[in-house]
Length: 360
Ligand SMILES: Cc1cc2nc3c(=O)[nH]c(=O)nc-3n(C[C@H](O)[C@H](O)[C@H](O)COP(=O)(O)OP(=O)(O)OC[C@H]3O[C@@H](n4cnc5c(N)ncnc54)[C@H](O)[C@@H]3O)c2cc1C
Image 1 (cartoon, rainbow, N blue to C red):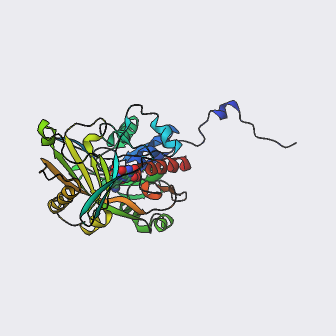
Image 2 (cartoon, rainbow, N blue to C red; image 1 turned 135 degrees about the horizontal axis):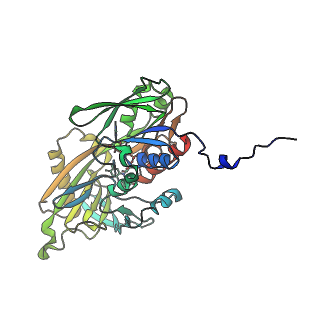
Image 3 (cartoon, helix red, strand yellow; image 1 turned 180 degrees about the horizontal axis):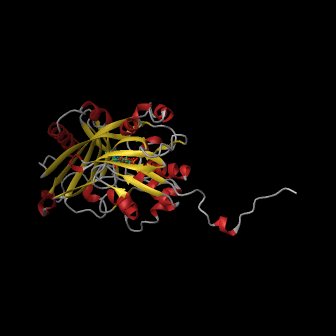
């Protein structure tokens, strides 16, 4: 008679694997999705974030004139796993009637064409960073902000584990030890550096060699004068546009997004090619050039009361890895991020989720 393994009552309630201690590096949506999933599976997680708040490229900037989404403008939902996760945040995300158009700049003539609205555009309130902050909140003290991971090395007391060197405010340095695995959810250049250019996992370094990600200059401008009754029709009637202007790829009226302050505010994103060409320019020079492009596209020639340009050195994936995530089981190092498969918020979420599920 063949003996079949039957689960004893106690076994059925046992965690499938013994709890482990994971270091997750980067609290963008990929890192937070990954850390939460590991925590829910009963593991210990320490999530390190260089900035003072989680969010990464789902970023919002507060100004005296209201909030700007300086990174991701909106997200779309195509995968049921992302849709399910969003159901845990009732009321936080709202549909944005982006009223999206395509702005053509041919022979100096500006035309507008409405884009068919195939998908809903969603935004978090009051800013795009709110979604990641909401999902990170249950991690409590396990999220260590203002702390940049500078090096991964074998644990000094137990060579089977990892320890991380970090740099924080006022040049403070620390070593965090005892990690069974390290999961990287940071942009490609940081990932390459933390992998020690192949020293920690030659296989992972090889797989990310071909990844390319473009920079993006972003301009945020506010026109409080537009809210005065005599000037209530400043600019075009659309709220967002994809543009073929040689400098500008995207424009959005921030004040048209749900849950935002009413002061007329716009965010412009320069094209990947133009951003790359002007990567080393002074922000003031970029600001002037993008403002001119803004006037050409929208017809708004007024001087903004607020203008700030910032550059994302790694913004939009051009060549992805081609796999949802990467996991080197031997080295116990994993990689997640939008750049594994694409360039969207949802890609990043699914990448973090699938990495966690593989390692559990
Ligand atoms: C200008 C711009 C516009 C965009 N527009 C859209 C859009 O409209 N719709 C859309 O779906 N997507 C958009 N995206 C893309 C979207 O923002 C990303 O897909 C998504 O936010 C990536 O999440 P992530 O977690 O993979 O990476 P990130 O958000 O980049 O998170 C990485 C985190 O790691 C941290 N970090 C880096 N190095 C270290 C270190 N050494 N130690 C500790 N922490 C570290 C960073 O501070 C950051 O918080 C846009 C992106 C940009 C920049």
